[in-house]
Image 1 (spheres, rainbow, N blue to C red):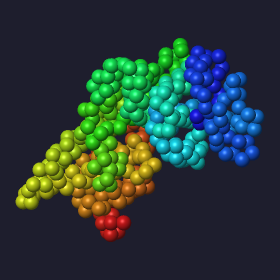
Image 2 (cartoon, one colour; image 1 turned 90 degrees about the vertical axis):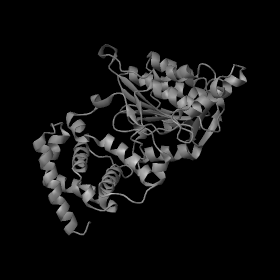
Image 3 (cartoon, helix red, strand yellow; image 1 turned 45 degrees about the vertical axis):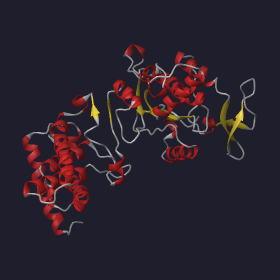
Amino acid sequence: MYGNSDWDDGLKGGERMQAILNCFTRMRFVDKKTAEIDFKQKEDTGSAPKHLIPWFEYSKRPMAGTPICFGHWSMLGLIRRDDIVAIGQKASSVAQIAEMLRKHDAMAYTIIVCASAGESASMQYIAPYAGASIGEYFMNKGKDVLIVYDDLSKHAIAYRALSLLLGRSPGREAYPGDVFYLHSRLLERAARLSDARGGGSMTALPIVETQAGDVSAYIPTNIISITDGQIFLESSLFFSGHRPAVNVGLSVSRVGGAAQTKAMKKAVGTLRLDLAQYREMEVFTQFSSDLDEETKNQLAYGQSLMYILRQGRCSPLSQAQQIVTLVTAMARIYQQVPVSQVCPLRDYLLGEFAAGRPQLMQELEQGAALTDEVRQQIVDFAKTALEKFRRAGGR
């Protein structure tokens, strides 16, 4: 376990979490002299040798809130800015992510509960519930918590192994009959408390691994039926260089436009439909070399839409930047340059808008409406910037 040790102030959440943690027979400790990490067997009193201190004490920092994440290994993260989570990874992968979080000072509000691939099935089974109890502790203190389970498919496999060892009757894919309840009772612990109860919240983000991209498999469909939507990451898109590799057709939000501003909803327009038509047309054109001009234009438009959705790692866009990018894309600005220059043009346009239209960008960021007049201003300025981009040789 990694994170902050400021647990128990008498709240029920803290007591429940402590009870679960007391079930663990091994904990990770750090030698105060050498700073080396090691596993040590707890003594009957529950204390460690004096020269060792718990890892979370070693890494303790002033706490602004607290995050988590789990599964095979779990991390719980505070919804403050951003949090990263993974489950069922190798111990080396856990160490790399922990180091990355520490480098960006994220461990001050992050906890990692680890039950790696080398742990027993029982440890992998209980890890998400331990993380959920930790998250509830901070939720009961009025904190906003993000808890990521990565991944629940391995959690289900661990539960299946335990059930078969206990002689329980197997069902579909050898899973026990209550495998749905296994995850529903876990994910339904995410909630938003009323102001009378402190106003804390816990948001669950489960991750599920699919086999050959089959979202209709047993465990994925169970998770999808519980959550408020899904983001489907497709391996073929990833290997083609499209990252994040989000399949727009299979990714769904049941929250819908309630989570978007009016300007964003208007800027999106028919983007989803256009991308769906492009994917269908792309498959059809593989069997035909004779294409009419209209089909070629539609393919070029679809390719430009796919390219503007590419992002660099750790390079999020603000709301204003997203709106400008979508409006210019729907106006087919990016279709006027080769596909290889779509991303450079997008970055160039955003830089031009930041320098030449700061007031407009600030208004969009603050939630201003996207009127027809504002849309036309964006398109006109983008066309002017496009000419400058061409004169500069596409740089």
